[in-house]
Image (cartoon, rainbow, N blue to C red; front, side, top):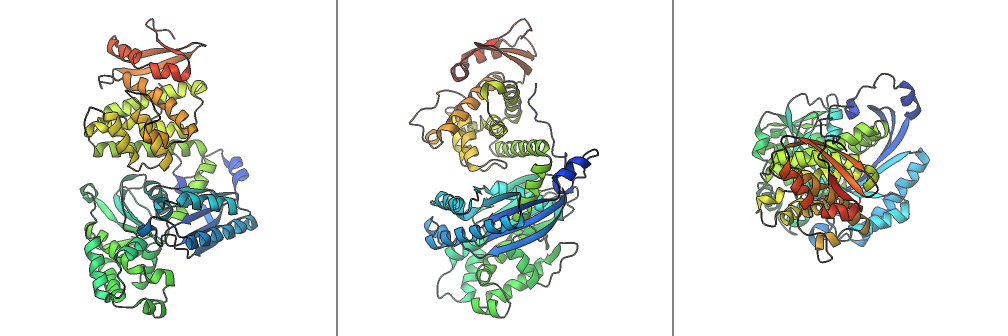
Length: 536
């Protein structure tokens, strides 16, 4: 079986990887490499241009933070304002010009909560593309966590223990359990600093009342119990935490500052009874930081207390550093990078499935069989490695809807997957995976299926091909006993011949495949034949 689901997360460890022997000539051709990362957040847009001299080391050529509050009004009205969009486009046009002057070879621009939540976010993305040529990728919270974790592990030695990682932006806070290799679980809360400010601040409030309202609201934050085991420490990222560290008098040691919970609380006391103007004039805070610093501090305090820890590690890196590290890792070692991405998707899908008590053995085995079919039928389906990632998520989670009920569980799977975040997949890819899971059984796509019609025509073609593969793989594990160990295929002009290797006669599995072969045969224009003589 050619479906690769083995753990490859240890191969070429991104920013900390050593250069393999024999690659000197290759690296000479690649480096120095100039790349840029753009973080389009809710409170500001950040640009970093860097030159990599080798995979793990870079120098910063230029950093710019433009105070564009895209999140203004989004969290109340659901829309980006015209003024905010215009300012955002202007900033990105300027970044585009700087990239040309600096000779930037590769760039990745990502947008987070404000653009993700805005009804007119797609309009903003289109305007930026037209004006600057920059393509914006609207990423999920899970992808944001992956990139931040990549930056953090390049800055800190996480060892072999587990850490709580909190990344707070203007629109949300992502709380994760991480180790040196992986994000083990992650939850997202809509408690970003700008969102809290706009939702909870009341004009004319005396300072103490706003603080108490923040504390009561932030107290609803909960860290899952699984995060309480063997925690090495609490790590906080984001511009607000870096500012709080400075206010608390913490200085970086080897790039990481330590802020005690007591010092954070004392800083909160100071901030709570200062006016906005005092924070700017007396503390030297930027105007776009002075109003959101108290909501941010309150969230960090609550999370640190929830984690049962008394100090906060501040690594002075964040999303933009993760972006450039990921870009170069893909550039230098594309195939290992792609395999790691697939492992991220697999781990995320399994973690989601376990929340709904799914049959993990069946999900993983269906994914392995699906990948075997995908890899061996490449000349037939003509899909990409991006589609392979979608297939992994859909195959692992195709039965997750049985948590709600077996009857109609394919529809329940659609709902669960489409309303979840999966690391390594875009929002569109998550919707595709949800549709693949929806069509792993019963009826084929129809015009009255809302989630199906939400996809583009090209995306629908990809979904049908992937769903056709999952149907066969699911049939091959009809009894959830993993009796089919592997398979081989041969493609002819009018048929796909399938040889099965497993335990027993596999009579039920053969019957199930023939029963569910209709979608596969109509999609690929070939009959599906199972050979009994051991020959393909």
